[in-house]
Image (cartoon, one colour):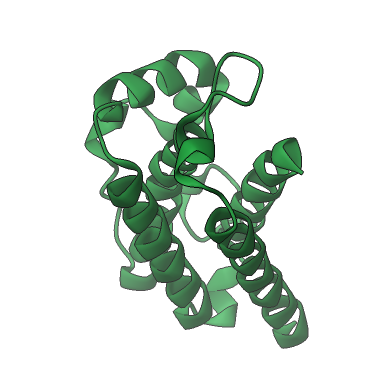
Length: 162
């Protein structure tokens, strides 16, 4: 099982590296120009990823500390599973809340958050990592699925630009 955890953590690190390569190869104009359907720019997508990653970070911190997660304020007290079922509504709230942020602050927050998430994933003991029944607030999901979901979310959005 240790190999499975190491493989997932390596995938997470590789996803971060792919995003870093993509982001550092963009011009200032490319960060803010709408490129996707719906008018989203690179900055909008990174902002979106940064905000949703805050839920994942809260979950991993809680798992590491054996406590309930301290969820981001942009959720407005909503259950993260509810928010995931109403992504358009919450994405609009995220963009409205953070739309005045500069590219550099969005990038820095995303980068710091991702690296923190990666370190948390490494630090969680294997016994906690794959136990789907350990945390009632994960509704039957294991911490490993939080990590895998974050990877998939980042990979999905990177594919939109490539």
